[in-house]
Image (cartoon, rainbow, N blue to C red):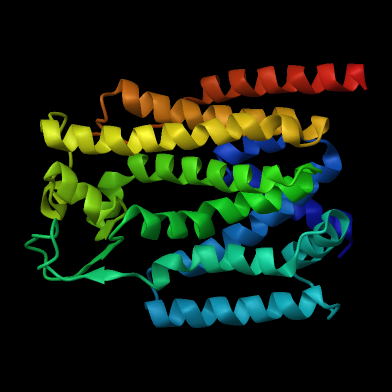
Length: 311
């Protein structure tokens, strides 16, 4: 399989699976778009292996480790017919993406396979469910989780976008935190139903909200004042990190800025929709309408055209 054929497979995967991300990919120059799609396809397959709930956690970790070992062999020149490996190997060499960062991408997809369990005596965990919950005690603990599942993606992306100011690295890290906190707010209900509580336990305790309350909030529009204040507190934390995204934009190459602007704008719009719904993330999944995404993409493409005309 040729490199171009491999990239075509990755573009197809991204187009069907990437949702918010793909709208940003379209605004990139072809070489950078190909590289981003290769990284996404690599991450998507790792996610699929990690999230296969038909298998035990031990089996999923084993499958992920075996697949990562296959990637390591391919990245060192071993013959492979895997189109994702072929494309990613080319992208890695073109844009100087370190193997360590790609390994961290995979580590991020496996974070939920190495959970931190809490017993029912922990503050905020008074639940009738017989199983333990996957939780994070403090925001520092959650930050580390967000770093691996989201910030590392940002650190890979800015290598493809290209930058010369090292301040971009910390800003990309913090922009990833903003994105993941937004995802966590949107998915509170679904995560609680799967015995996963990503809101830090110290925050639940601060606002007097229990895990049991979160698990029982399905299809409820009328949150208590404490519950709403908890979600607003986390939203304000995300808003703080979106400021890093604004500061990051001028530090990356001009031909990639419109794509990053599209991505930040779509994710920030999602957070704003959650805020406008008064944090009702329990009766239905909050999302950004496709027409809104297309409008944001159109503005991003105009920025791309303006950059090309100036260039």
